[in-house]
Image (cartoon, rainbow, N blue to C red; front, side, top):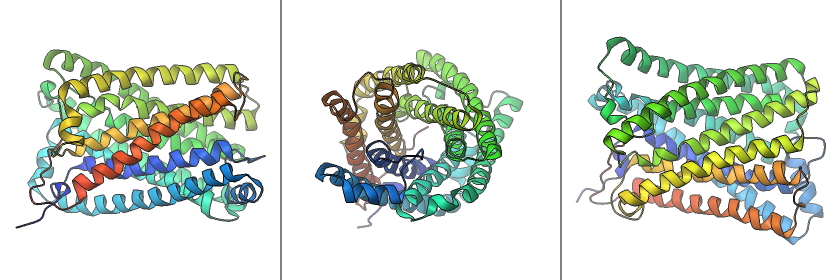
Length: 402
């Protein structure tokens, strides 16, 4: 009897296992971001966490303990899955399966690689803030390196997209419209948006005018490129789905709009903060609340659409609770993670700052429970999918998503 894993049949979509784990580390950071005081800084750091632990009550200490443990566990998982994917990807590139994919619609799944790299840089930065004492004292020296890293990842993403577009837009007839019946072609948008949100971090946190302006301008380029590319892919995919129905294995991509909205939304908030602090550009709390409301409206609209199709197709019964496996199942994690993060921003940067609800009141905790519910559901899903795909069994076989 030969024991195999579903992941032994490699797909670039397995990079989403790393992306999902990195995203979960961000959801735990939200506890610290909005519940731990960090006066004079846009984000909490090691020293703020230690001070809150020393002076806070039992509830705050419990939240800090859970957050720190969650960040540590899922950052390690993020890196472990990233390194496994890089190794598996390099071996897979030498196979006929790689060449076949490079000449199909699924070539855009290669964008999961730069997406995972960008997510890991974001996760490592968060881990640094939480676990490294004195990091804020030298953070200004780190921002140029962070910008350079994200620009390199962005260039990798653009090069990969260029290979795909250069092939399908010059040869003609090589793009299979009948296989465009999902939002799988939105993966390049997600990768570009993840680069954009990473580039916007120095804009929000730096006090140097050049760094702030560089962060704003570079993140604007990648954010705008992501938006334009995404709109084209979105409308053409809808047309194909209306003609041919939605591809079952790729159905989770119907909710990829949700993490794209979160990343671009946080990019915009970071840009606004940097422009306010450095260039005296003002955005009031009411405008921010309306902006976040619109993003959440789009996200829940696509959540309802995606869940409708997934349930009608029996996707969960087959690929989540059943014995079938598809690398595309990992695309289910990012929407839940993104909703958890966006709800936290909506509550704290929208409702609280606009004076609609008091911080730490009953309504605040009821709404925050929604964000935590999405988070816990995604923690379960990550563990479930990792067991399905990476635990050895006798008959494990992956169904690749197109």
